[in-house]
Length: 421
Image 1 (cartoon, rainbow, N blue to C red):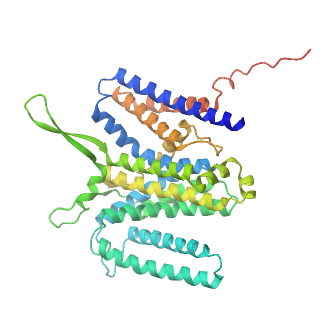
Image 2 (image 1 turned 180 degrees about the vertical axis):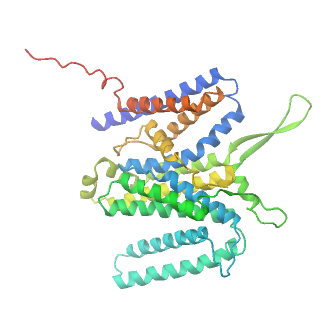
Image 3 (image 1 turned 135 degrees about the horizontal axis):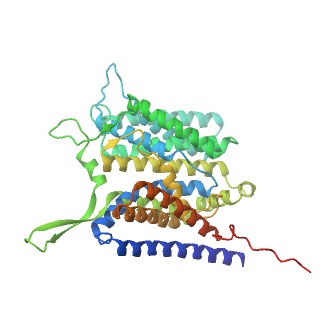
């Protein structure tokens, strides 16, 4: 009976979310004639993509009863590293490599070394000396591979390729997320404190790497062999599925761009997280840790590993969001992700995920992201001032959180208990 009731409440929450999204969509259609156009819908999807990717990682963290305040700062740091990897041409001379390149190399080595340690431990019967030897071997092999890859991909005598930054930048974010998760899992410090410290540190590191107190690094495409990012990088911020249509006047043919590429990355992140949560044992572990950590530990759930995974995934997705930000805005900034962590948390809360952990879904988060995106779009189309927009967003967050808890007015006007005779 309890399981059936829980499923019914989950379905009711999702129906409430979809009803709110539908009402907002209808309101936008009525309030402004441009809302329903394909161009506007495409722009909304492109605008919410970065927040949507961050919100996926935030959902995994909050489901474990944690919080990640550092995703915005990690994203800022990753945009600076991405811009520098794309634009700089460091050589193997007395100056050596730039700070951004060293950070990317460190992230790559750390992840390969960590993967080697995990793989060796899975053997089960290897002695400690063999584990250390295998781990060191993995690190040496990783260094050799990285040096070779650097020459091929262009990290030494030319700018990095699009594929290189799509791998390296998420690894930089994942390295910082891994550090968050390891500290939280191995100590008794609260996630709020640990990620707050990382938030401050990541901003400082971003300014240090950028130089001159946080210099903005512009990204432009090289032409005729001159320095610049590869032309393929610009495509990450554009659209696909372009359809030619004949205009009504003049007989000209214009292009109708339908799907932004950042939206596809957001959809991929959402599908991956949904698969993990609903098809893999890891997903059940995440819900178990958030629901009751002590009971999960007694049941044999690797609580520390689950937490490390959640925070590492959040960092990886922050790095991916940074690459897409650079492709859309053609710059790396030390404050590019300022306030992004609050937008991600708001989308997760609107989507019905409990801040206490153990309850929520990726689908709800996606709907929450779209509600936030459509609300912003409608207010911008109506030329509402940014101050009023922030106030309305705050009200929406409180109302949505209250509605998801099932008690909107009950806490304000509690019913008077009946006294027995």
